[in-house]
Length: 306
Image (cartoon, rainbow, N blue to C red; front, top):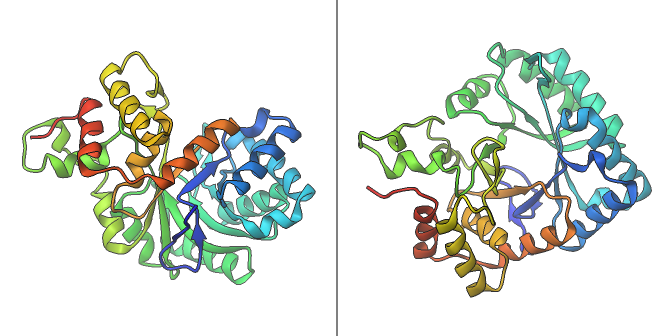
């Protein structure tokens, strides 16, 4: 698998990121096999958040790393902080520092390659965040920083104080969740698709050379379900199946290839714990959809062209 450069860093990352949100219920052996297989397939970027399994996902992953310390050097280890589940979002310096310490302890790691602020805190104070970032960087505990689910204006607000590049923005994006592209296609039209709800995050990412990590690439709505193989979407699945047959890959891999085809610097986060699905998704990296195929999938998902 060819690696992609993460702008503003020396990181060479796999186009596919393996999300660790669902591993808490796995046995150690199964988790070990999942991580090992991902590395063998060329996936070197692993995504965590301190709220996944209330820390249990990090703990299990940390046990795997403890058993295979040599794997750590092959990885880009990423974590997210800032959510206090069911209570609030917290970007205070105190919370960021304590949360990162907890992440590192559970992961059995000395440092994170990337730390992302998980969801925007309406009370965030850029000065306090910048101080926490500086302390973490100077202590060698975090090498690079980014955000998740942030608008361009929120990123610009952070940049008024944060000295280090914000290299990543994680955003929900799939063939069935296309708000990031709809508003540009429908610009100057009186339609719901023309409404911009993200502050033109994709265009901003391209201008400022931020990498976009697409989460929930197989989902429709907000965790409402998977669209691949779903009878609710016959036209989309017919088109996915046809393109999958053409390239000898799975329909799910076509959904990944659809995202990777966009000229933004994109990584796709897959959250499966199924080894066969991991291996199938990797094959998307060898496929470049044509412009006609990209738009055919877009329209088969029910999106219109003006």
